[in-house]
Image (cartoon, rainbow, N blue to C red; front, side, top):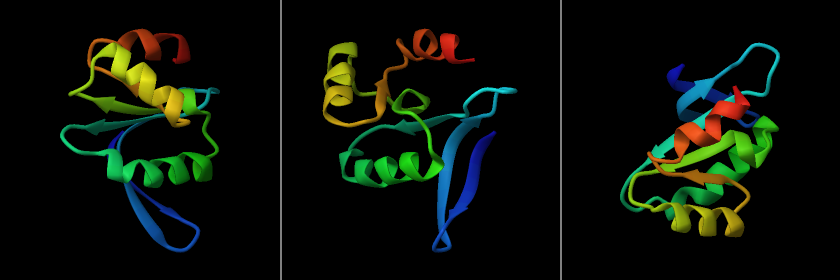
Length: 95
C-alpha cells in the first residue's frame, strides 16, 4: 500500500510512504526521503518501536546517500538505510 495513514495510541496520525504486508511474514515499511530528513529520524525510531518492527523492516530510502553512508547511518540509528541501488538486495530476502 502507498501513502497510508495510521493512528497510534494518542490519536497521533502518521503517513507511511510504502507498507508491504507479505502473507504470514513481518510487514515492511519504506519511507522515501530526499534532502534534509535527519530531523525526522526520532519520529521514525518511535514509530518503528510502536509498530513492533525490527530495524531490518523499517527502511529509510534516501536518494542522496551512497551505500557506505547508508551503512554508517544504520550503525548510528536502529533503522535500516538503503539507497535506490541497495533497496532490492535488502528487500528480496524479507519478502
